[in-house]
Image (cartoon, rainbow, N blue to C red):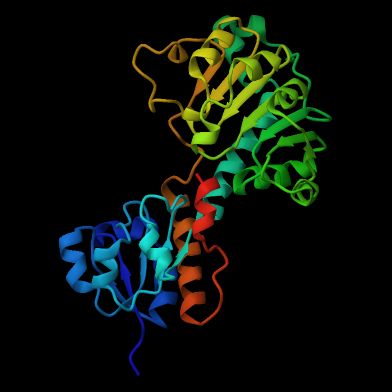
Length: 330
């Protein structure tokens, strides 16, 4: 009996970047793996027997041409987050199962955010800067409040926001959150107190961390009103997308020295060469490090292969994306 065919949409040298050898071996026990590469012209003739596409960034668009070339295609297991770049209406119309690894990508982002929160509340970064600037004259305990009872505001309770809230439970912080799409039960499950609007959330939060999706409704949602509501000495963290922040308003608020910002993303990314964000002393910039990097990428590959194995075994996918999900997904 022939085995189902799974096509990997990467060139051979790149496969190990996304998929660990033990995970590929698990898949090879039940399926025939074929490497079809990234070149679409070369891909299409090779898809006749393919039942599942497996890949990460650069997944080809699942359009009418692709579906005609792959008449047996029943699933696309994506080893990354957003599926909007390739999951077209034609794929959903033919009931192709689309899965995402966004929950695997949420792990390193949430780890990075929780690490930032704990260190910011300890005054870690400010203390380092003082010692670097003033030497042993600055060798004293920081005036930061510490973590016990500190208030944290989360903008968004999607996969990342929920995971951040869950990880913060053990730290005995006050966690508030704003998300108009989340149910009361979702807030309760992660131990976050719901707040009705962004301005009120900013007012309550010593640290405000952004986890909203990059969709038109959220563009520049962190505006002058929200930033002005943040308490003196507060910190803004952005590991989501730069487009969600009114950067002009953010720079204006940062110029006052009233708040700090840790920005893993900007708009544009990287910032323009002359951006004040590169010079302001109360801004810490990182080049999009919070998401999956290097070895962490293979965690997303593992999740995608797990989904592939479930589908081939006739089990329901755990991370399926339906067409109506796209409206509120990043």
